[in-house]
Length: 315
Ligand SMILES: Cc1cc2nc3c(=O)[nH]c(=O)nc-3n(C[C@H](O)[C@H](O)[C@H](O)COP(=O)(O)O)c2cc1C
Image (cartoon, rainbow, N blue to C red; front, side, top):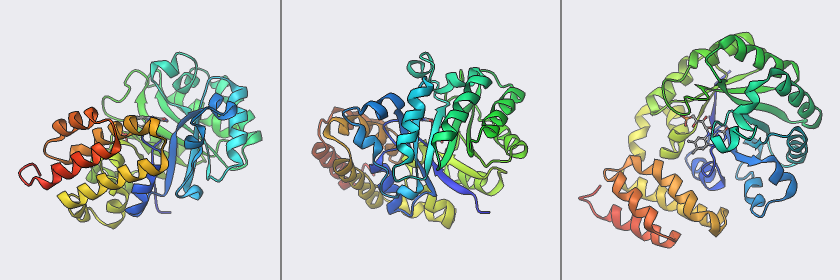
């Protein structure tokens, strides 16, 4: 079976505008959406319709929910299951203090039983694919991680993604791909590996060599939205996307999609996040990050980008 190439869930990044841009380059096999609070899904937050937008490829889109309360997570999962999507994913990996300290995200990793009871309750409500994305845990204890994942599997979870770092490691240090592979060996359900892939060669290496069923990438796909296509069609194709003209087109397309698919209240924060990663492709990355941060509207950002790329000395 060919390995599936997945876009990771990332707050303020994995929204419809980014997915549309990635689709333009050939697309990922699956798109995990940015985490959405279970409480907001159920309670109908003011911007919830943007989090619920599963376009442009709903059949390859996975909702991700986050929360600390079983009841709210179950209600949200049941609601999302009825929408146009591939499945529902539960965030058991977020280590951000604001999430973790209130019992959500990676806090679920503390108790096999509690997570198992939640998984069983979710299974009763989700008829589509039910998945969990998690980290290694509080420590790098593989036996505990395996026990945790086996319990999820036994309660009916269909798919697991492992970001191979502990909670305290956050995004630093080497990622334990050997853990994802060992999980794959021990579990009957598919496992995706994630974390620490920083360039096309590393992505291709994991796709080629990892024993996992799928390879998920996050930040690299923001920097290089064409990366899924490069991985499928050969690494030598990467260069063709890195010309000033192509980079400018991609940046402008992103702004256009942001305007189309996200509310004005989100434009600044989403653009800022996207360009933080995307501008790593250009010579004057730090300068352009600072400049974008000072612009207030998408129109001003567009003007800035056109000016930059029209100046050959900068490109
Ligand atoms: C800005 C940002 C936001 C993230 N938001 C989420 C999220 O909403 N849900 C989640 O499960 N993981 C989230 N993550 C973690 C990523 O999904 C992924 O596990 C991590 O970035 C490692 O993969 P990478 O090295 O390919 O980026 C986020 C990461 C970043 C950098």
